[in-house]
Every structure is written in C-alpha cells, then in structure tokens.
Amino acid sequence: ARAIVACQGMEMDAVADLLRLLVSVCQGLARLERRPELLVLTERGQLLSGDEALSWPLAPLSGFIKSIQLEEREWPMRLVDVDVLARDQEDFLAELHAITANETLLARRDHHWYVPRVVKGHLPQGEGFKVRADGCYLMSGGLGGIGRALGQWLIDQGATRLVLTSRHAPNGE
Image (cartoon, rainbow, N blue to C red; front, side, top):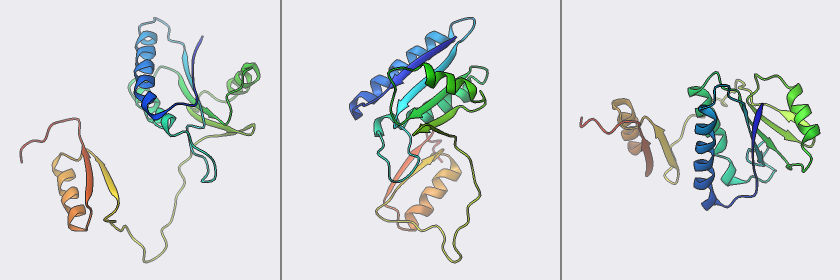
C-alpha cells in the first residue's frame, strides 16, 4: 500500500499549512497497524543545478521527511522531486517502483533519475573559512557551551547576524 501526497506551485505563506497537513497525515498513518509507504511528490522543490528554477516553499520538505525517517526508521517513505508532476502517474510509479527502496530522496529531471551522494571535495590552497559581515550564520545546538563559544568566535571575526537554535533553553552559564 502507498500513501501519496503531491505538492506543487505553493506560495510561501502556505508552507506552514502544508507542514501541518503532512504532520496530520503522518500521525494518522502512524496509527495504522501496517503503515503504507509514504510518497511525497514535489515539483521543483530541490535544486539539482544552478540554472534551474526552484520552488522555494517546497524546499524544506526534504528536511521534514529526513527528520521523520530518523525517528521512524522502519516506516518506508520517500521524497521524490520532479520537474513536472504528470497527470498520468502510472508510468512514473512503475519507474519509481523499479528503483531500490533504499533510495529515500530522489529527483527526476527530463526522464533521468538522480539521488544525492556525498563526494569528497578539496579547498584550494590558502583559502579557508572567511566570516562575512553581511552573512547570516545558523548554529544548531548554539545555546550549549560549545555553541556559545563558537558564536562568540564568529562575532569576534566580524559576524553581525547569528541564529542560535537549541532543543533546550540556555543553561545560565
């Protein structure tokens, strides 16, 4: 069995409603004895190259799906991003079924399939991390001791905008 949620052409103010809907769908499916595969289809919600258009409101869905996958490892779910959502999904679903179930984040552009891979990169010699005064720095776990120390270092290096997030309130140190 498969549950399909298709998302396309959203405005930024609809993202919160979409995420609430997906949470409700996930909570409902989680109550079932046998959970169906959850397939979330997006149209241009993931950027594959710098020259394609991105539907910004759909971009956060990959993080949402990854978070659920971390908490519910036994529940099969996929996020599939396509260039155009087809009206007839039969051929598309047959192609998707042929792809290994291990792939949970996929993209399809012009009838070609893509999956994310981590590749080793190299920085050119002599170039390192440079703090930009006009940049904004997001730090997950930023309210703990290491996060606050790193935040102070960024400020000392010239950063003017920091966003510190944490699952816990600051500990008063």
